[in-house]
Image (tube, rainbow, N blue to C red; front, side, top):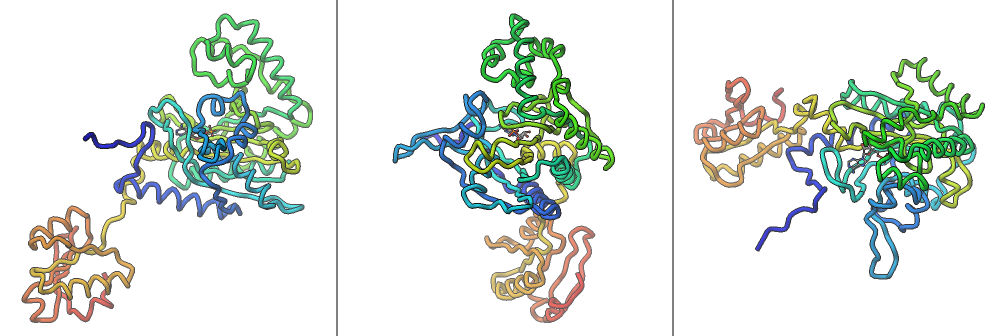
Length: 417
Ligand code: AMP
């Protein structure tokens, strides 16, 4: 019988990789807390209507990528393809918004999109993100960008690009959409089939196209910046002025629109050359209309998400995380199973002192046990043999320096290792 394999586009997180995930998750929690964001967790699957309403009918996610199925009760449910819509659903349903102040949340977990798997693109992937709800002001856009930047820095990525743009108010965005559509219709003979199809439903999405033919046409398309109304311009100016004053590096990217329907005003994206063709490792923006669209009271909001697998690809390319792999402090061995009680006594004393301790559970020879201690990268090996038992001592071997000392059994509790 053939062994059953994991599903295409999904990945096991193996013990040899887990330290990276634990380090990132710790950093997400620690840095989000510094900025006053609290964690919110929602179920992995939701009513399919939530994503249809929240993400938008013209998007690739809703059109082609959702894992949607009818459950045994006849209801249509969807594995969440992103977090924002579900987070807003939860915030509205649980009345989490407080009058007169912002509510700020972060999240981390698995997301699901039926995409063509390649480097940095999976069908089950992970995102960390944050949302700041209930401030219409540009300083909240700046705060989420600062939080995102802090995370990137604290995990050790220095070489990356932050691209930023504004879609303006709904009104500006609609005016621009019309202008862009007219331009694209005039030039539609040169567009890819995919883009021709998008012309009617979501022309803004064409600006994200990676097709070389499309790129030529997009290069001369109108820029949204020229369609911003006064208020939208002021909002954007404040964002970029504040970022400049705080020495945040960014590039204004006039064609950056991010395909999702719910964005307005500020949109941004993080890029790294370590990623190949899928070079964006995160992005976000303001979404003032979404909460109302999902049935809540109108409330402005801004947020972002990182793709965690992509952060790991970047960190791997920098070889930054190998030293975080967890290695035992001690490997406790003996020359005979007669001394198992001593082996476990010593192990427990050291664990109480918060050291990581490993034992041999398959009764290897002393030589075999030393080989294993070495392979595991233990700092010290303890050896308990006939002589040591007779003298009430242990041998403490420093595995990196290859030196050893004898230690009184009773000193293990206090010895400075
Ligand atoms: P989005 O929700 O599409 O704005 O994506 C935010 C980030 O999630 C992207 O910048 C990627 O880093 C990551 N991401 C999106 N889709 C995938 C995927 N299929 N596989 C891996 N990472 C993804």
